[in-house]
Length: 286
Image (cartoon, rainbow, N blue to C red; front, side, top):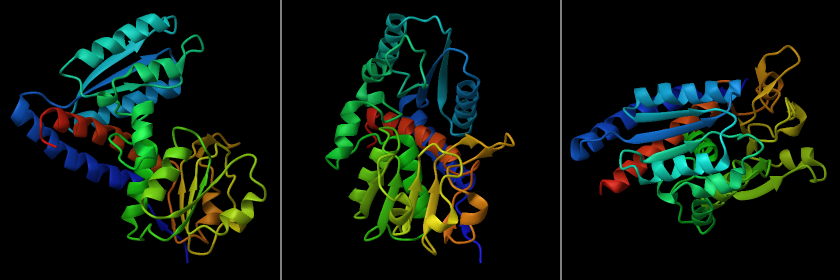
């Protein structure tokens, strides 16, 4: 029997429908829609497509979007000046700086310049620190989406053995913290972990964000495990695929997310969710 599918597209649509109602409530109280500023530097095609998807989702959720596309020659000082302007703009409740940035711009400096109160991506050190202490304000969008996907299965996180493949500041580390807060027993695997396969086979919840196409094979997965694939890669045939060998693993797992159509839509939905939460907080509705 094959695994049940965790449909990120359908879950994201549910989130957008809820946010449209909440955005309308903010507009009724304040006279302003929740506002998201998107800042894209350079001409990376994948980044442009990603921002375009976010803009479409904002329209569906009743969120005002202030779109800034800057040339690759933009200096760090110019970018910081724009962020300062967005920080001070009362129409803006969330700020997204699309990564990666050109090499001459320090990402850390730019992300720290975003006001923690408008940090819709959840990347600011203040918000990461709040997550570490178990009192989060804005949570990073991808791991927040993964948690929502886990919850959608109806399987309790508490008491489960969770294995996270990957230790990035954007996905792996914050996801491990979110799972820990929900009383899972958490192991993080990375490039230096010995015998990753045996660790993975212990997982009730296997969350994969390692950046290697079809890295996780069926022999690495416990029978009936929940498998969520955060990866986005190109296979040898040019088609999109995740970090999990979907066809093989779906015959062994209990639940599995697809690529595309899994974590990606939920990441965007959580960006919008953080923006609306910020607007509600600024309007005194939280």
